[in-house]
Length: 266
Image (cartoon, rainbow, N blue to C red):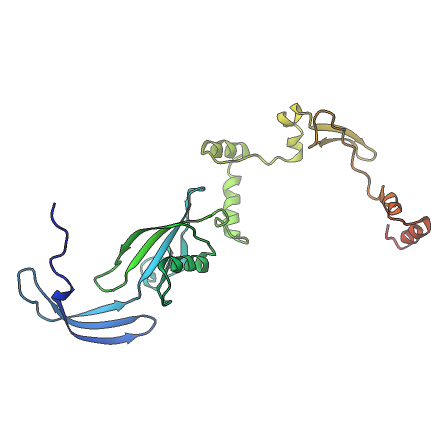
């Protein structure tokens, strides 16, 4: 196997002149330099523009329980003329712009600021230069453990809610239960009361009881406390049936209750 160690080092480059033609949000330097050649000797002086950036770090949040990762969507001016949208899906990342800040603290801070996310245990998976042909940027990439249970859809996300509504409406509930169960996803039917009354499990456990309402007639109810020795459910009382009894228990006499009646309070 060939030795991958480079033949030359930084000592084989001579910087003849360094200029700063631009200083803004970023900095551009123009270097006049020469370097040694593989065939021997020194090459002629050349000019190279260098895009100067501080070191950076990025993290890919991973939830091992849900088997999910999280990416953020951000506007990037460099993608403005590349495709239909300059908003890019990418890792959470940031530059080392705080003196003395550890790399792990940097990526955890960026995760909180960009995604409101707490990142736990992290492991570095890469350390490289994204574009050494024109920039001195160095990037460290981490994978970090995170809880993504609440990151799938934010409150008020009408577009996502509409998409999910249309998707789930395309099939019957029983079909979704079968498909999701086959993928080992916990799922259960949410039944309407009329469907629940005919549920075989509820019927077998004696949880469906019948009663006679004084005005509505025969009613079926689901008794969540059904079991050996459980009492039958009574029908719901008419509005106001027990009001005076409850008020009397609070110490109100007949005179006080008559006053409340006169004020239409009861």
